[in-house]
Length: 268
Image (tube, rainbow, N blue to C red; front, side, top):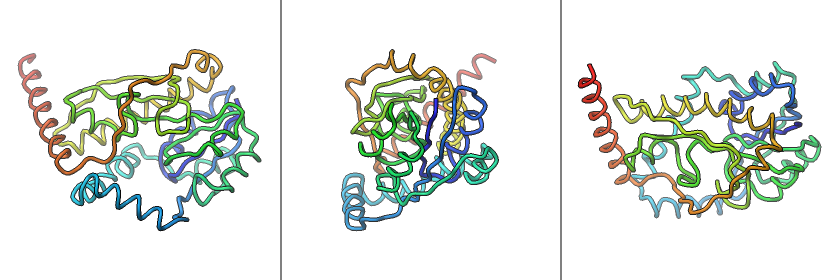
């Protein structure tokens, strides 16, 4: 399977997955495209930010900025993830840049690569004029269970609902966010740590580790997984939590962690 990888992170899931993918004889990485996510439409971006802030509140927006490193820098540091340039150079994979995901240069690079399938690893919304270029379209790794948690940041919304289960989903990309047919899904328990921050970083790093294996599995036998793909029904969409939702996440985490400690004491 000849694939092209699209990512908006220079040190993230793409860098982490590439070494495993190149080990597989059935997988050929034709090119990696890094999206710089330049703001080519400032007014549209400003309107989007204002709309989101009105929805979750100023405190929610500020708290979202504070939490963002939990899912990026802190996880990448924990897993010792290398820079994308270093990884691509080591394996002799062409690395190209594009101003943003939905840009004519992205389309040109996808066409040039002549890949059968596109792989999205940590990107914003991808339009049809991009994901339709490869013969088999594109697939995405969503680090949460679908369709229950579309667009959701991992772990925090599960805890919000009092659940101790998370997971990841590999799905086809369609015209909406995280709504495409499910190719493969794996669930796993959330291991609680003393603070919400520690719990998020620890478990999100675990999701990197297991989804790395999952995407290789899907790509090796892509026709089989495509034939058994399941459409999503009844999905729920999430965004950055408001400040009050965040407080509930803290309370739920504290309650679940205390219950875990009591169970450990009882068993001992």
